[in-house]
Image (cartoon, rainbow, N blue to C red; front, side, top):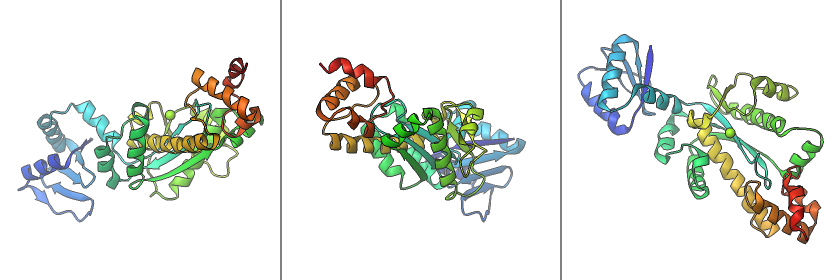
Amino acid sequence: MTNVLQLTEKQITQMEEFYRDDLKHNANQYILFSVKSASINAYTSGKVVFQGNNAYKEYQYWIQVFGMEEDIANKEAIYFTPSIGSDEVGKGDYFGPLVVCACYVPPKAINKVRDLGIKDSKAVTDEKIKTQAKEIIKHVEYSVMVLNNRKYNDLSKKGYSVVKMMAILHNAAIVNLRKKVPGNVEVFIDQFAEPGVYYNYVKQESSVFRKANFTTKAESKHSSVAVASIIARYKFLDEMDRLSTSVGVELPKGAGEKTDRVIAKIIKEKGQNYLYDIAKVGFANTEKAKKYLS
Ligand code: MG
């Protein structure tokens, strides 16, 4: 039986102090301390691993000391386990590209993720996304795929569904990222299609990663997916700023009524063809906007 706690520096110091007469040397540079009488190892990433029955008693003791609940502690430990995660942004936005990011959060970046409080990009303001992304990209490995509007619209015309485009981008980002990451790291995709559908869509790609775990609400379960979603959103916002500047109008996110009004304004000023380079023209908004034209 293995149990893991993800602890703060202060909590780890408290543990080390408690076991000070029961410590043994460990040559592993990532291990802060090991306990002699039970299999307990504390890592520089803030992770403490308890193995076997003796260690389980200690694990229960520490959960009590730190006021944790066992299943919450387990979820937290899984969240902070180094992994590769991928997520996308832009599929529901009329304006702007489709962006996919795959990210690897290495052990040394776990504390940074925790300090920045990275959780779920949907619950974070755009300003905070920018601040968090600029900081976290210095500490993680990632690969971003941006499908611009022209390519998106061309693929749509060829009959590609958005799910097919996403599958191809996720696979490409993961394949690309894995070249920079030590082997055997688990890969999580924030699930947008059944695995069978996904693999069918990528079967013609030159390289396919076949061992992904498809997980719903993955950004709340794995920090790698949460960080991937922050980076993807950051790149998307950046592209939206760039497009807004080139159009001379602030392009709204999403696909609501405000979007329809802006579409009408652009059609009036620049003609409908202009949309092909800045929007996903197959959305119903292109037609809906026409009622604002007169
Ligand atoms: Mg997602």
